[in-house]
Image (cartoon, rainbow, N blue to C red; front, top):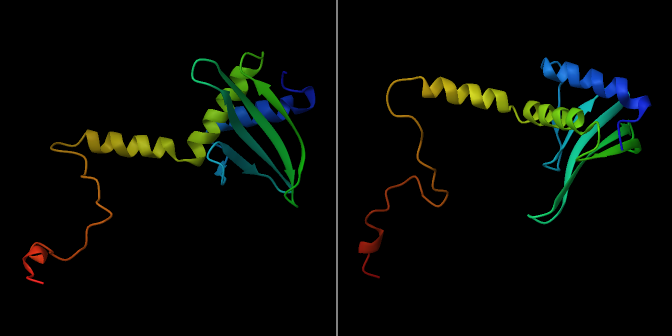
Length: 140
């Protein structure tokens, strides 16, 4: 399926604005779904996978949601469809925006450009803040 004509201007407009970082994309409880809130409606974009490693199928779903949280319309584009590249780019831009990926990359580049050692040791969730080095010396 291609982008339905009624949606084309919306998708193209979101794509252009997302390319300029002018859309506030938000995360959802689903790690592969991102949403932009408008005055009365919302638009979500979700990437789905099916199949196995050797034969994966991928598609992206666009949904329009009303103020009551009801999905009132939408469409899907499968990998290989004519408009796949546009929808895939929009999903990537939405993901990068909602997860602040550009900020993360900029932060890493700033640290990399500094002299000296970079990086931190992984925090051990089981460690306590006190010194337990003598805990094994207790005779009972």
